[in-house]
Amino acid sequence: MNLRKWMTLFGTTILIGGASSLIAGIIMLLCDSSFQVVVKTGNDWMFNVTMMALAGLTFGAFAHMGFFAYLMLNYIARSIIKKPYYWVALQGFVAVFVLAEIGYWTYDSAFPAATFWLIPLALAAVSLAVAWWKVKETTAGAWIPTLFYMIAVTTIEAMPGFQSGKITSLIFTLIPLLVCNTFQIMRLHRVLSKPHASASAVSANASR
Figure 1 (tube, rainbow, N blue to C red):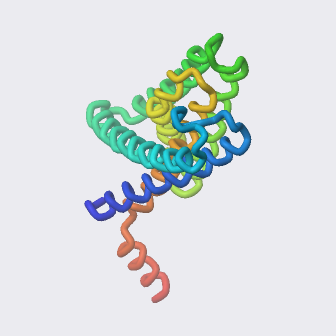
Figure 2: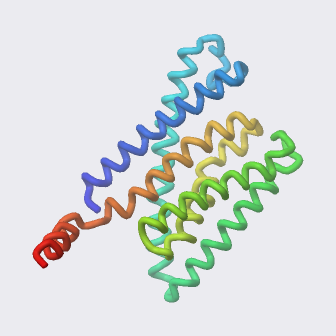
Figure 3: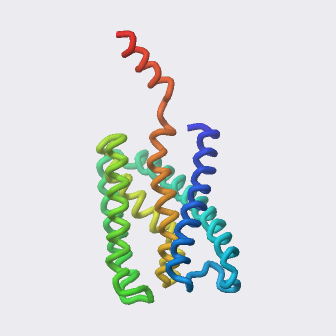
């Protein structure tokens, strides 16, 4: 990892955040005309679309901050906890706890009644799909860390949406964060790979 790769990852992440928010916002706006990012100028459709894109850029930057925080946490935890499987087990426990906590937050709240089970189920399903994809491209050891990152870190980043009490705000917050976090966790092993080493291996195999 060098500065150029890091800045490329950051720039791509915020652009993905802007694009995913724009797409999700337009779909929500078409399905529900009452959905507005800016209530004050709610009749100005184009202004709301512009604000959706700008909000998405913010989500992308926030997601990258969360990604950096997770990498630092993982580095510190692995330095302090001598037995790696303890840290892995702790991440698995926290991921399950967070899903249960989401149900607790949203049960009997301003959110629709089905939110308390639908949001944790959807978040778990997306996280499992991403973890499976990550394991397919790396190793089986990526299962729990990926689930922890996709569930716990995404939930922390989406706290403003949970605090809003509005399902539309929560969905509009969660979608770009999930997209950005999926991109970052799937991009990490590619960024850290050594192309020259791969090229040497290919050359060696070709010479046999």
